[in-house]
Image 1 (cartoon, rainbow, N blue to C red):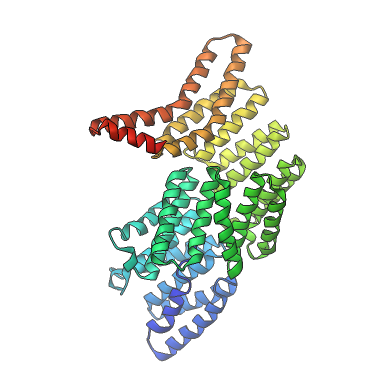
Image 2 (cartoon, rainbow, N blue to C red):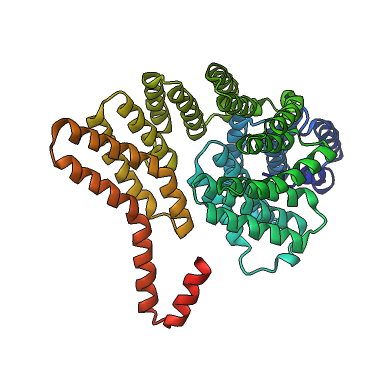
Length: 481
């Protein structure tokens, strides 16, 4: 996600809060020192931010304290220091809530409210609480509803644009690619209309869109967007996080296309910037694990995954349950390919414990792996039981999917689960001759088709109740096809 409003409040501090001359001079001196470390050295910068906040609080200067806390959050976000951001957010709430109508009396209350919402949304996004993050980013988006975006100031437009980017990313993580694409494409169109010369933001959103395109299998189009984004990042050379992230996606994509030399090139680009972005080291090792896996070097792949997990857990401020469970899933797959089924099953169970949620597409993937490994261990009865448990989660998930294409994507990720459960029931039928296992198999086969069938029935009924002419219904079907 792009870094919005860099230095806005720092500059504002120097000129907007004139009190007694000594106090103003102290604030200006500390601000200049803080700005020299902004986004470059975490502890040195934070030292001065803290001094400014304490000085402002001592002088009853609430606005300066609020400004510096927001600026501090942007600085800390570059280093993934979520604990300090959480502390700042609690202080901000205490400042604002203890003073009735404080924000409403500011010259631009919406800028401050949405800046706070951005920090909260960013914080919850990074700790993996997507539902809370969605609340704050929707709050930003909705606050500009009905306003001509071309008349918004640059700071307001940045907040609106970044809310679109985050909402798109959240929908992508929720396994809703069509919604994600809609938000990215809308944001790209907004940027082209309002700030066409802002190639940095344009390429960031192109890179994010590329991730969704990759998930849909359009890797060539994804790479064209990513190459533009990486070229921009390398030219400016001021955002190692972006360089590492985009280079990793390119390396991963070229691996998928079987282009090992190209993948190695982008891995070498990543490696040059890892010291400046240590919280992304796990991406580097995960991609190297994929390369080793493709080359059937399972021992090396497992070693790289161990390094990925070690580097990820070494940065505790970035750890969230969803990401950790996803990495455990990746390692479990390698163990399964190496015929280490019991170890793979144990790790899947650990990932399920880590995830702590059944209403999540990753849960269905993990359950698919679990039934697969149970089958390899000939524990068919338990595989069947796990299938029933997963299907109940599928029923709760599918109601939250609004696009047919997203339902298709959900089902594609779920088919391995159904295949494993069908295999378990046929094996049990072979062993016992009991016809109930054929009935179970039929149940799971029908369940696998139910999501798309239900959507077709709903669409048909909706058209009939609305008295939509058959010619328009046919045209809609053609467009969908």
